[in-house]
Every structure is written in C-alpha cells, then in structure tokens.
Image 1 (cartoon, one colour):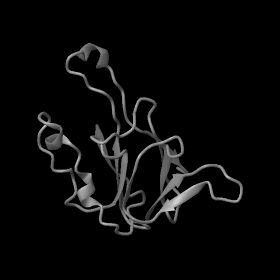
Image 2 (spheres, rainbow, N blue to C red):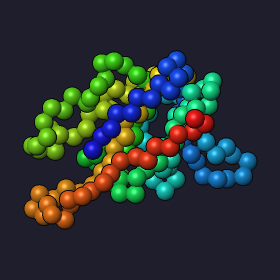
Image 3 (cartoon, one colour):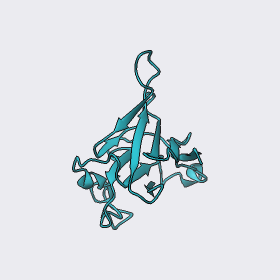
Length: 152
C-alpha cells in the first residue's frame, strides 16, 4: 500500500525533510535531505521528520511495526519529492496481472530537484505478503506510518 503525504505545513512551501541517523558522538542525529530521493527502511533508517523551516512545526514519521521493507517488486519504502500538481499517482491503473504491470512507478518523478525549503510530498509504502491461496492468514494486516506532531 502506498500513501501520498502532502504536508505543506504552514502553507508557505517552506518544508525541510530530515532523516534520523545513528547516534554517533560528534555527528548530527538528524540529516537534512536536500534533493528528491527514495529510501528503503533499515535498522539505521526508520525515522524521518518534515518541518516548516521557519516555525519548526511539523511531523515525525516512523515506520509502522508491520510495514515490512521493499523488495525488488516494492521498489522503495519512501519517496521524497518536490510538489507537482500533476504527480498525483504513479500511473498504474490496474490491480491484477503480471508484476511488471502492477509494480510501483514513482521513480519516474525522481529528477534530483531541490526539496530544501519547498513544498514536499512524501510517498510512503507499507509492504506485506499477500497470498491469494491462503487469504485468511492475511486478513487484518494493518500497515502504515505513525505520524506525530512536532511543536504544535
């Protein structure tokens, strides 16, 4: 499942995105992402935050406990993109068929544009195994990010 998160926190297009790094003495705990990029969750990368550069208000984004990690089919776990009114979905219009026809196509929007102090859109993916031959074992999957307000 994919979610499109368009925060534009203060309505001024002044968003900054940061990724939490390892706690290493002498290094910052949060690293600013300045260009469009995609990320895969790992032990070292499971938290991000998007903030208004002026007010410091924003949201912390943490991976849900059942969100899984992207494989070759899933492509990535998060995309950080500059807002474009034409980028509302990935263009995949079917839900069944061969993997090549249903795979996420958000990479087409990665153009290495600056996302520093702009209106940022975050695409978040929660991954889980769906087995049509054993559907009852997969009912009730809850996936998705945890969003927590910062400085509100």
